[in-house]
Length: 195
Image (cartoon, rainbow, N blue to C red):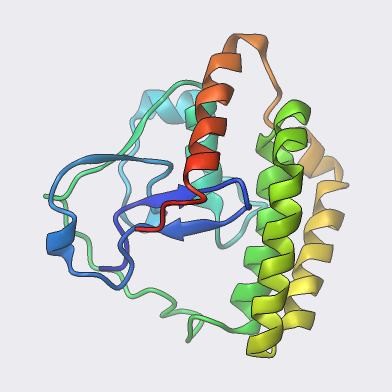
């Protein structure tokens, strides 16, 4: 399988559920953080409230961003095992680890956090996010891509200072506080869940 939907955690990591595993391991519907945009159906009502995929992401994590916004508004995302979509992961960029993908993923990771986490959630997650970025830096250092990864993080920080990014920031509303708490509990739980 390429994936049965996405999980996102307090370390700032998004990952495909079931990637590389037999599809028979995922034969029951289940809640997910977000749907992979390569294999998603969205209700019109959902998109009218969340907004569409954010073009500032360009590539990578745009689907997690959309799923995050939906969760803030109280929507649920789900995996449906009877739906089958054929998708060749990394077919456009050529490999799982390459400068284009690493730069855009790390850039968009910063933007995803900036865009969707209100201040209280950012404070709750800050120690985890620092640990997550540190671990990923070590990981990409071992792969020979530490400079590329750090460059992407820098691009993400710069993106967050632009008027376009500030305009697209998903504003905190007290009415959604309960949804943020549910999301936060899931972010912590997903640190320990992989598949």
